[in-house]
Length: 405
Length: 127
Image (cartoon, rainbow over all chains, first blue to last red; front, side):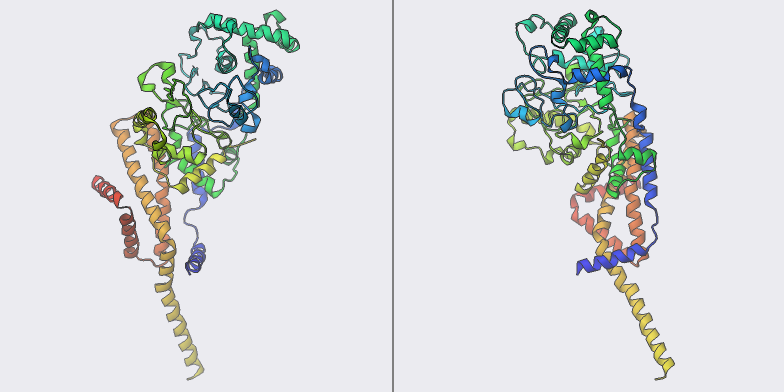
């Protein structure tokens, strides 16, 4: 009976002329998104080393980039996981295979953060890298572990330098590495030189090609040149491409009803765009979202102080860089430690973190840490809106419109 | 009864019947079928209005980049109220009365008793 009543009412309602067409909502979404900095994808690509893309791909996929083990950039940035690895904490040296298989062996060295996808990395204006922004060229003061001796003015080239000398990530601490484990730039440069020497010996042809492409002698090739080639490949391979949302914004394309509703929530009630704004849907700033900590944590025993590890400012405790959102629907799991499985859940953690947090399964320290993070986020919580389950699903639909192959 | 009389009778019956449907049946069907949607939109509109008000106050009292972003988002979020208003007008045009709409509004407040305080606060701030 209820169904019949609804059917009749629906028929009656449909007879009424629409008072405000969907076009108005579309126009509002278009104007707001463009005002908030969304740009056509072609405006975000600039590759200063275009000629090195092909060689960069070889280095990106080469396990020889690992000084004393067999692991490449591609090991953790996989095509099948949309340039991430599909697991909560990345697994570095000590195991084989890809994605979840690296966890299953149980022998690999866990890297205490979730692998970040590479979409848009190094595009125009994309200058802050890693969860804690340890390479950050957004402001006048350039931040990187190299201090005043940054190897390049290109932040992506600097970022590419780091995994190769990170113990556990791409190398193990053997007697040779131990000798240079002083955490000084000079020592790091010596390790880089060892990597180049290894490549020169084992991949002579590629080094020769790189030297030719750079108009240099073979002996002049340094790690910076390899890093430039890899950065060039990353820029090209993982550049931002046209999405359904871009077509909607700039070419008069259409969004589905749910995507449109999600977009209005994204820029409106959800206040997602307060942080996920600009051309990459990130403000490149550092915020606290109290997702659970999974794994050992950067600061050990299930603790990760996030941005604090870079700045040592107490105000930066537990803060992580706002992640960009291109292809976000393909890059689960989410959060700095990959503790959240789905987009629905991670959105919910922004405004209702206690819904999923398994407090009863945490030990005392975990609960204490979680409480600290919750209390630190209280300022955000004042402004983040409550969303219904249906509204969360609209947001997910909208985020799916930011995808491309 | 003459043919004309029968026609007049029939017309009168049809008119009375149509009037009855229009005045009593349609409003009840519309009210029954859109009650939940109306209540949900009413609740959501109230929510975003409160948040918009707070965002405005924040810009006035403690201006910052984030406060301005909040207010911008708050303005877009008021579209929810537009949906609410649109549905309300549609329901009114189908004969649902103001008292009936007020009644289902009160029902949603009863369902969310914990939020009644917020409704009161909103009105206190506004006036």
